[in-house]
Structures are given as structure tokens and as C-alpha cells.
Image (spheres, one colour):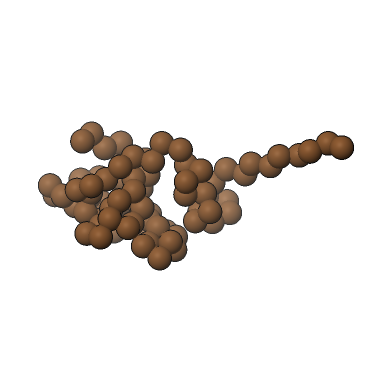
Length: 84
């Protein structure tokens, strides 16, 4: 699998329940992440390493929006304004 730096991946960790932003290689299975969302769906703004054995690229970031803090560079505000 060709991983792209700065992209979000899901199904990470040994229980496949983490989401992380790929930063660099560590070894065959583990990769360095720049930030991540825990299995409990809590955002962490720190580096770490996670198993990428079952990694899946997140192509639509709407999947993780609810976990990102306001002001995050990947957080997009979508407002639908209805005019009456």
C-alpha cells in the first residue's frame, strides 16, 4: 500500500479502532502518525505510532469531522441556509 503523508487512515492499531494522519514510516507494520483519534473517538494532537496492517484511506473527511476540534485545518464548516 502506498501511503500518502498528511492523509487520514482508519482501521489502525491492533484492534483496528484508531484513525490517524500518516506522517512517516516506522517499520513494516507500524507507521508514525502526526495526530489521531482514539478508539474512544477522542482527538489527540500528538505524534505516535500505530499498526497500519489493515489501514484504509479516508477519502471523504466528513467521516471524521465530528471528532476534530474547531479551527483544525481539516475541519470544514458546512452550513445549509434555507431561505423562506
